[in-house]
Image (cartoon, rainbow, N blue to C red; front, side, top):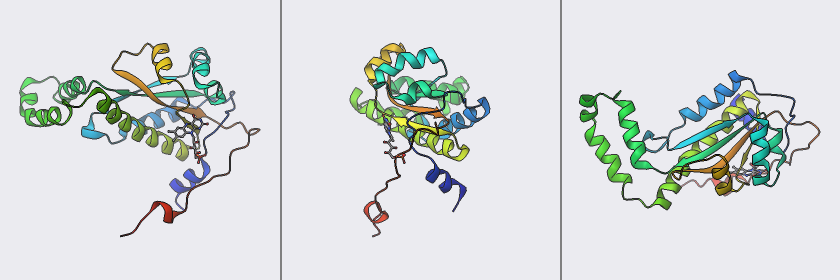
Length: 206
Ligand SMILES: Cc1cc2nc3c(=O)[nH]c(=O)nc-3n(C[C@H](O)[C@H](O)[C@H](O)COP(=O)(O)O)c2cc1C
């Protein structure tokens, strides 16, 4: 079996971490790079990730997530948030891509207009759904990178996003959607047996 698949078999949604063990900055950097390299719609990466190492901030978040132990025992807690200001993101994308060079940007104007055409008419709810999906793809890349490095992790939706947005002082265009707790499993806490539906349930050859 490939080491990638072995990593996926090894990983599980870790319910409690050994709070004495920290993920090194090199390993954390590897996970963040995987998140950054995830493909996104139009390449706009309409999400942000807050990387929380502070025990105090984690303690403030815990009550907003039903005191799930993953929060306070993690080495790092990543907060994935959707960015819903698509127009602003398109503008930011093209100024970065052109290096703020007006002539280069003019050469990209059809591409820029195409993105506006695809996204400008969407409602705030549609933009939130769209940006959230991109954040979840990146979350998946982060989970896979953790598995490869034998870093334990737990993806989490069990928290109050509105309360968390307030705590983290997000502007109205930024809405948290998922957490990824990282660390090393507490060996005293048993994991759930791995369950997956059979291949025939998921995959349909035609
Ligand atoms: C989007 C998402 C949200 C989840 N939220 C939570 C959560 O809030 N708390 C938790 O303990 N597990 C959470 N999980 C973990 C799942 O329950 C777990 O991945 C699933 O049961 C499969 O088990 P495994 O990851 O150990 O293979 C979440 C997983 C995903 C992908």
